[in-house]
Image (cartoon, rainbow, N blue to C red; front, top):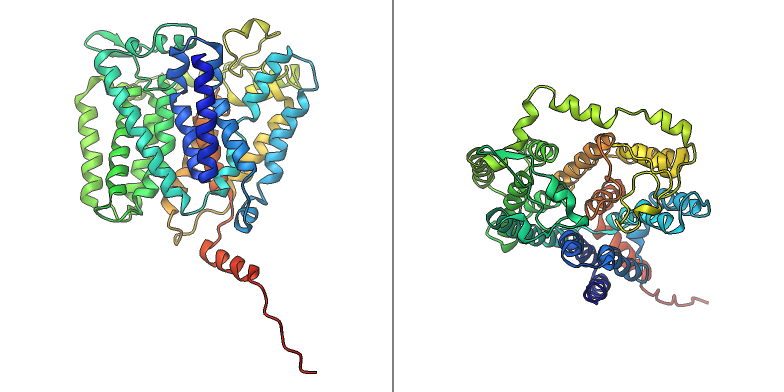
Length: 448
């Protein structure tokens, strides 16, 4: 009953928030995504596995009943064919009984659930983005507080050992003082998800921070959230995400486009976090990237099987859910001939076959060849960081699975995809033109 109650609340909160504003609905769904890991670990019911799905259903239902203005229609025009293909092909595969019907439904959910975020990213206006950024800032600070508590009190206080959070208890490769320590998961399903979400939120946080006026409450909030998010990445001990974070900070610093944020404040933030990491052994796992063979061993582990062999064996896939999509523990026995490779593109082939892979590769190429933002765009830096995050995410997809079906980081990734792919338009001029078009015309007096 507790799990059902949480699902009902999740649906209502997301639905009502979206009816208020699209940015609020997206923020609400991300909020439930942040809580998803700790909820399912502590609520002993299979229903808890679907909290995020129910929250997304509230967002989707409210979004489709909201009117779409002319600006949004224009920004969606180029994205709609891709979204139709990305959803349509997996939906068509439901008619092919390659797997048990429940496994197919789980696989379908994993392959299409996040795709609508592409549209939501394109529909967000320049006025929506600061509010979404501040919402993520609050969420990141709250998660950081939990992460600090986990560091002090221990992860088992927050995550009782069970089947759904076993990966957390396997992540004890943070070594200092001669002992193994847990990687900090925050409120997420595991530490890697925590780190990825913190890095994924940075384009919005840094982009909004560069626009905030001095001494505004939003500036202090975003400043604190950037610091908390960066520290969270190092507490989660994800080496790859730490590298991405450092790259983002380096690009923003080198570009000099820190907007209204003073150089003294920016340097103090970067320097303070650097000193903290240098003095805290728990936060130094990313230094192992400099050790010989670490990167090459990781790549070899992920690509030691040929994706071409997989294509030859399963040209139309092994069925939705049969190629690596995360299946709830209580359904795993139903998977027929499971196929798994540490490669996201191989997962797409194993479930959607060659057509599915071609659609995704085509979309990624189309996305990354869109026109970059103009220097006059207020969100110039935010969009460039979002583009960088997309490039790195898609380029490193062969090194693991979960890029396109992870809660909630996949939603953030595809939200950025829609944001950077949508054509730029001066919203003030477009709104004025739309308003003039809708004004009733005065009757012209006859001269007869």
